[in-house]
Image (cartoon, rainbow, N blue to C red; front, top):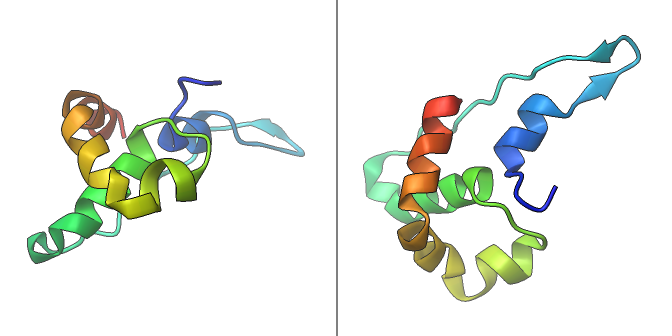
Length: 80
């Protein structure tokens, strides 16, 4: 589970009383003028993390993570 992103978890690991089924992930569709919001959302959905506040949001670390994981984010967004 260490390498599972939030998008993968939500889409593939949800179960209810009737058994497992896949979920649909919806995006917010930010305007490109809100680029930092777009990057934050993409990092939260497609990069695995343990603690959102400490690993992603603290001092806008999502901006660095976005640059480091562009390929992973792009592949993840194609999957969903």
